[in-house]
Length: 424
Image (tube, rainbow, N blue to C red; front, top):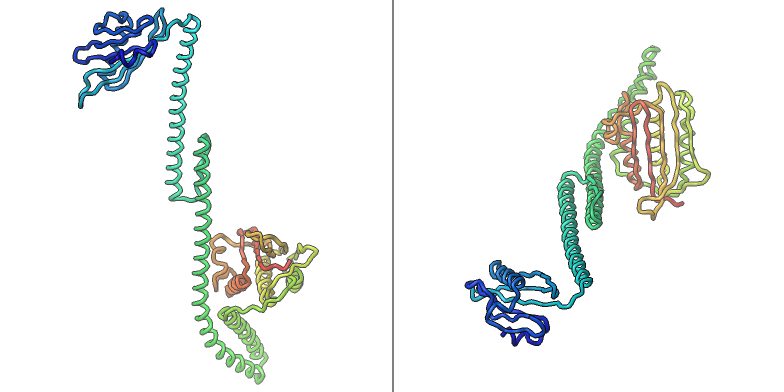
């Protein structure tokens, strides 16, 4: 069978190996010009016979293919063997030999170099593959560790240093995802906080409206009686006491009016208004008071108009509240109040907005107070009502704008009012 299969292939021989007998049988070996068939092993040279026997035995005992290359003065011999299965057992192996004859010494050495080069290349490929796998495994572990950290803190930034390009792209995508999720969660928290604040204000507004109405009528009666008493009194001291009582009644009446203003729904009368002119007008109205309190008023108003759709009276009320608070914060030692007006693009870069900034050098507030400045009835002033900034906050929000306060105790307060719908 070996002869019939291999007789037309020059330099190729083959046969079988019996595992039970541990011998080569049915040999067909490429010996000389024509391969010969023999049932004996004597036609294979001893060195080559031992090599064939070892490869064939190895294939039968290891149950997998085995091969080797040997050389002798007549050339190179490539030997290969595969196990032969009979049912579930292995009875031997089939082997084949390819003889490469008549290689000159230089060519043979060249063949050795090629073989050695191929072996080195294969080894390098294996090492490179192992290195890549190791780097990928390290990158995967880093990604897993980073994801576990992101579960607790979305602000965490996974480092991409010394990572393969593919892992770096994955980590960068995860970092962007974490940043986006954090921004969305912060935005949702802000919206939730605003909703809770609005609900509290609505409930408080209903309560305040009822109390204000109940107080207003008796207060009017008290004022009328005190006026009559002052008119009819002959004693100067009584008249003076009535005058002081009337001043206090007017102060209480003002508080009641502010309470009612706070409780009523905000209805804006929007019209195009030059915010530059409005800011200048409101600052000038406080010049005399600022002079009395040794406060220097400074404005940075560009040489052009800043038109926006606002309710002029309501926005004047907001500016007055902020300026009044700044002057009161600098009442003891004086200082400087700077007012700056500027326009800028909003985040969507489709609409413009105008920002009005007030910076004073007053006593400032600590961090605990800043978080409550817009809460109704919260005040840091002995005689304050705590409604000015709360009402201002609602008025600015009704315009679709935003008001923010940054303050540090002993270094002053910065108020920024942003008004959208600019007509620039």
